[in-house]
Image (tube, rainbow, N blue to C red; front, side, top):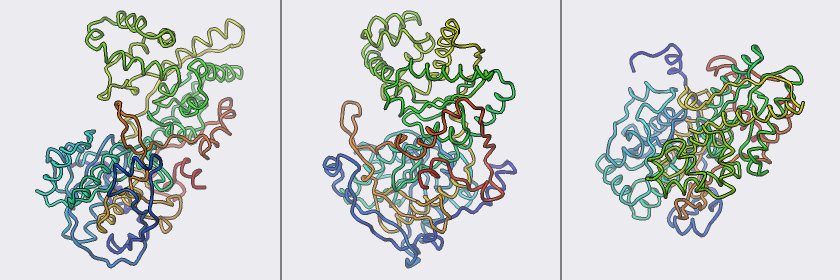
Length: 550
């Protein structure tokens, strides 16, 4: 990178905070072992699959280590989609292992797990690391979605690590990536291969968290970027007073982003997928709910508003979930026949081959959505939810509902819409101070775990709503987060996704306020992320973690 912006230049000088136990180096931290652990569910099955790593104790670091150790040569892998702060995780690992022993080396495998298998790498130096501190993106070494789950991959990775003298790997990724890290750790330990494996929790979706992993990195920054954009749109809506904005937000498996953005901006409507599933809400029920709010605001001469829609909503609606499942099976069986049909023929073909109930649901949808449900499947054979314009589906169905209401004298107003999908805008933003600090601490903690010879652990930094003097660094056995799930017809061990808890403090706060936010124009405009200035402006935490830790 030769040309950099004034902001990036200033951010390079930012010194991230660290927990007290790590401030004098990774080797100066004393390891404290807690009690043995068990998996979150399916204990016997997980124990059988992870015989050498299951039951490992929780770990924390305190001051009082000896201050020096053997050199640790680490291979770093960025896995899955980008999240703000990934470069700071790598910087934390680099600084951490160098603090253990200056002879330690760090190698970045290129384009994700594929780099480990294909032996494509670059050695990371002070010059490279220093150029990427506090920057967004994963462009230092790139990322990828290759899964590490076969013995052949493990053995190829072992051979490539041995060539480079690597004795430890850190996988920086989400739930699936860290599941693969755990499988890798188990295989190496079981076969007495001297390669440790650690993980770091990454995903802007916020669905990799538990009692010991307060949040996944990148969630804070991404939500602040989206909330700024939503705030800007709310200001525009309140200025023009003529549009309803339907905004789809990232989050296929959970609605954490939508909920956090609702709490930050106080949008008129926010649909929470988990609530839809819990209450078994139909698509018609969701449309009626939105139309009711539009009509109530119109009665106050407010023909404008903002509705937040989580990306994965369509899979949480019971009848849509059944439809998508049936479509996946049907299209898998009839792939060749289906590929040669015209658009109209495809719709007719599906209508005639679906069951009576699912065909009724399919035929009730706008043609544009019917065609999107027919699009090419992902590598796992599933519909590509992010490509389905759920925001347009809902706005079109709401318009039809309002037309019926107007005919009955139940609605008097104008309904004009604008549509948005905020996704990639937040994945590579310059990390907020929170993510810059949290990510650097996660990386440094991972280095400390490796320095003590541990494997199969995820780096953990807790108590982050407090001053950094009170942060707790440590490690959580990845097996502790696992359960068994059905994948491609087989039971497989995976880290359990953290969905929005309907009895949790963030949702309860939202539920308490949403009726008021629906009718009133009670918008909050968060503005852009602030990196410099008063701590109450620059060192904020998300509403989610603030409420959870209160």
